[in-house]
Image (cartoon, rainbow, N blue to C red; front, side, top):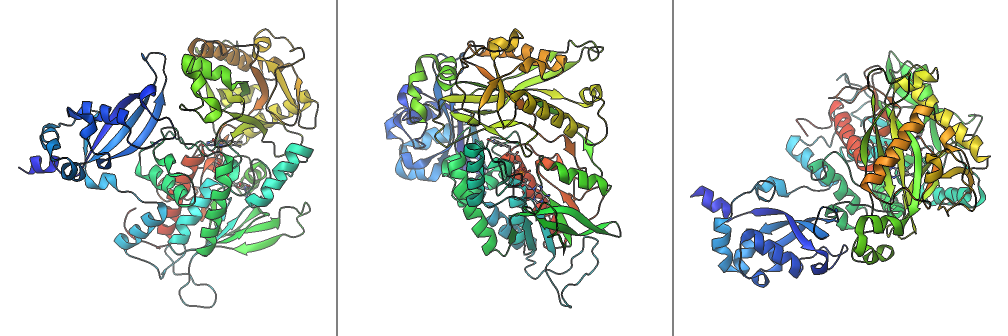
Length: 624
Ligand code: FAD
């Protein structure tokens, strides 16, 4: 009896509901259309779809599937069915729900806790309620030693969060919600001023080394495509908590449902402003234009940081600030910070990453490769179907003599694809040239770009006689310098047609147009990397062509160089406490520490580190 009652209560999750494009209102609609009701009726075997009340259903996820193996392109939905509402509005559905059985991957009966998950602020508050509210923090100092500040009495632990990218912002948010005294230190500027600095870079070619596409409020992910896809499980409670927090700060709520959520720079900038205002109202002291140059260490423990005004080249403004713990969320472009950590004997280990080139096609070409006849439905992001993207992952056999002894397989893949976007400069030093991609929310530019990269590891660094923990960084630098020289300076990017790259030929002008605004120049990109890497990139292009016929095209232009795909270094830390294994009081987090790759995973890592630090300072008890 309990089983039957259970079936007639709660929520059923219906997945893989396909609606042909012709029967769907299009990518921007997240409502319950007639076409969707038809698909639902089929799954629950209800004979008249139009009798199903829309109010009983909510869309949990909507994706677009135009794979060539399908007879026709379709939108694919996951929908929650609220049994109580359904039976109230359409009692005749009773027998159909009564007969409904869970089917693997198609129909699932949800337990109540699976359907609730709030934003991070409510998660922390719930945690404080369940685990014991420590609104009056008791003991600080990670060892559990009572430690007092400011002349006696209980005081809040003072935590520095270094870096205002996704990981630093989410760590600050959690810690502030738990009642810590948080100072967020960011070498770059707030988004308003950062926007002007980026404008000066793009229009007048003036690079501010502290406020640019990598450094400043929101971190590397601000002037980006704002893709919110992650490999860490889009339906997991933690990812949902992060996405709901973004919605709270102004992201459109379709990111909770869209199968490939993305924001675009125009949505990210106001969101970050709201995030900042919230943190400030929660008591976080935010210091922009302030760079951490050193750690203050006493008795093998971090007790603070040395900071300077980041515009002050001579560091004459340098000051010491005392803290009980330092969360290090500096991203993977803070090369000076890695050097400082090394000088402080913090353990750093080299990590595999990927390098290559950024390839750009006309967006229309990618639309027609991916969608064939449906390509006309894209209409610069305003049409029924999303602007087409692609993702290719392959393995290539290594042919190079020195590396081929054990039939070495190197993975090659497209990375950070920006449909309707543009190629941007991500250098943090005028002598080094590296690029990435960004877009606006509509993805309406006429170009599609993506990194085309292959993995590199210690074997590759060895070939350039590079060793030690920072070998990967030196490897990146080497090719960024070569690219700057090949471009001829002034941030001009060397480019080559894909067809010429395959034939080792300098591209003749006129070159296909590029979205990169600071200027391009024909260059021998096939000579930039060591021969075995160039060979792997060529093999991968041929494999891409098999999956996406038309990819190798006269109109496809390669740009050099893509080096900052993920961190070349890891800063080892405890899995449980998130504390560095080599220096007490230091909490390395996010992409720069080697524990995340992308906006959402960095935010999730920041969030967990916030919980771990809060716990070590006894700001809450029990489990998360
Ligand atoms: P970061 O975002 O790098 O933030 C680190 C912050 O620390 C920076 O703001 C920096 O100024 C600051 N800092 C560094 N050193 C110091 C110091 N010594 N003192 C004080 N402050 C310091 N990912 C996606 O998931 N989707 C995308 O669409 C996407 N597009 C991208 C486009 C571009 C152009 C770029 C560059 C990256 C893109 N990424 C994207 C990657 C994504 O931005 C990163 O994975 C993510 O931002 C990492 O977050 P983080 O907090 O670990 O580090």
